[in-house]
Structure formats: structure tokens, C-alpha cells
Length: 160
Image (cartoon, rainbow, N blue to C red):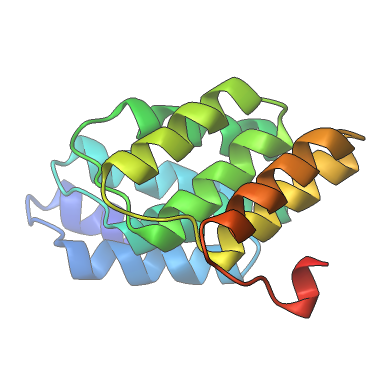
């Protein structure tokens, strides 16, 4: 972080491929707060984070027990029209929203996923099943499972 701050204070621009690996390293080192701080600085400096950076940050927040922060970040990303999620980011955002009980927003995100031309993946199915089952919503879990199967996709043994 000191290097990034030094570059900024000396008037030199820090480019995307300098921020993202550093955010990833902070995440891997268990320094989620520093990773979030750097992500905010990156955005404020006009350097848009990519989907992998967003996904790493969300995953780190959830892994360190900061589900509320991950959910709030997922909501921000969902509302930010400049963010065009790919399938892995959709899944991590969905997981973050469901962890904080924001199932309505998760439903909107699923609709956005479909409107973007994506079909829910097996990973998406597993995220949904885990969330519904852990909240005791077995009927919803079965509906999701049946919809997935009726769309012609086959879940793996992991989904069962």
C-alpha cells in the first residue's frame, strides 16, 4: 500500500494492472480491510476494477466473516451500470446477497443474469441451493432445482 500511496503523492498514475494484483495479494494475506480501501482508492482514481478484482474482493469479505460488507458491495455493483458482470462475478454477487438475506435483490440479479444472455450455471444452482437449504427454505430450493433440471441442464452429484 505504501508504494501505491507514494506513487499518488508523487503525481504518478497507478494503472489497473498495478492495483488488481495488489488487491489480490491483500485478499490472500487476509487483509480484507486494506483490500477494500485500495479498491475504493482505485475507483476514486478513475481506474475501473475488472470483474476478477470485484469477485476477489467479495470472496475475501465473505471469507473473513464480513458478509454485510460483501452484501453491500454486491448491491453497489448491481446498481452500477458500468459494471458488466461475467458468470463468476454474478455467482459471487449472488452468494454475497443471499448470505445477508437479500433474496429479493438476488432475484433481481438472477433476472439481470438472464437478460444479459447468461443461463444459471451449476455453480449458480449450488449457491442458490445452499442458501435456501441453510435458511430452511426447502420449497424454494426444490423450485430452483426443478427449474434448473427442466431447462435441460443436469446437476452433478454435488448439487444433490
